[in-house]
Image (cartoon, rainbow, N blue to C red; front, side):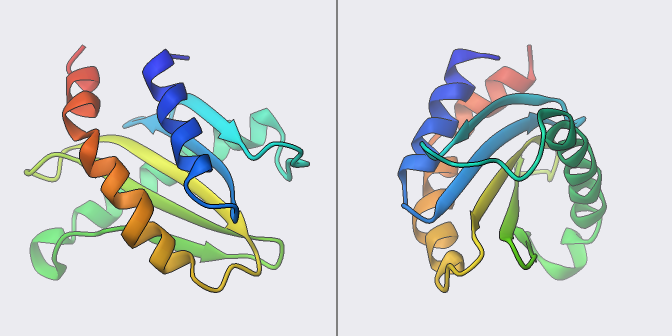
Amino acid sequence: MKKLFQEFCDKVVALDPSIRFAGISDEDGKLEATSERKGLKALLTPEERAQYAITAATRQYTRLRWEYILGRILYASSHYSKITRATIPIADENSRLSHVLLVSFDADTPNFHEIIIKKVIPLVHNNMSTFHAESQK
């Protein structure tokens, strides 16, 4: 795993105490790095996380197809009884996907939308040039 992606995931987890997990995958869904809240008992195995990342990247491609009609996608979320998950596409101005950020929250987090909009997405935007440079390698 690349150090810069690991540091980024660590920063995401540190943004809010309700964030359980952060992972970043490339456009094909290959996990580049992950980070978990300290003391957390993971709900998914590493293999299940890898599978989830692949399906999340595939879904992001599908969502990006509709941006020209619906507008730019900020994130998508799924609410399970044990967890809330969000996927945030990292794409260039032409909607070319370079990475996908996966973030998990405690299931009872009432303000996850606010956390994503005010904390996570600004951190992503501040690192866009790094993500795009890495996708060109």
